[in-house]
Length: 211
Image (cartoon, rainbow, N blue to C red; front, side):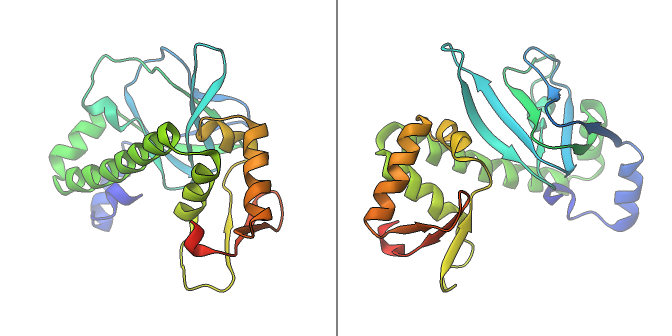
C-alpha cells in the first residue's frame, strides 16, 4: 500500500498486529449510508465500487477500488462522522482494516506516513477535480476521450491499447451520462477513426492527438 511504503519491515510487522482482515462476498457492502466512518479500509484482493445515490434514485459512481487502494482516510480528520456514500463488492473481496484510533496512533508513531497519505489524497483530489470539470463542461465524446487518455500507461506503445476497468454502464455513471449516450459516443469516435473497440472493455487508440 502506497502510504505505508516508507516503513521498514519490522515497523510493518508491528503495525500489522493492529490490522484485521475481512472478507466481503460479491454484492455485499463494505459499508452503507449512515454507517459510522471510523475505519481505514485497504483492498487486499478483489474489487469494490464506491458510489452515491442521487435524488432521482440513480447511482453516481465515484470510483472503483482495486488491490492496494484504500478508503476511509477522512475518518482521521472527521471523528464522529457517518458515511454519505456506499461501497459494494463487485467480486469476492478481501480487505484489511485499521480503526481510527489505531490509524491515528500509526501516524503519530511514524510521521512519514502522514506525508505519503497527503500525497495520495492530493492525487485523488486532482482526479476528482478533473472529473468534475470534464462532466460539467465537456461533450460526451470529450468525456470519453479524456477518460481513455487517463488510462494510457505508455504512449510509446504501438498500438496503444487500454482496458476499461469497469463496464460501459458503470462508465456512464462515472461520467455523468446515460449508457445510451456512452454507446453513441463510442460509435462516433470509432466512425471518426479515433478509436477501435477490440472488445467491450478493450479499446485501441488510433489517433492519440484526438485525445
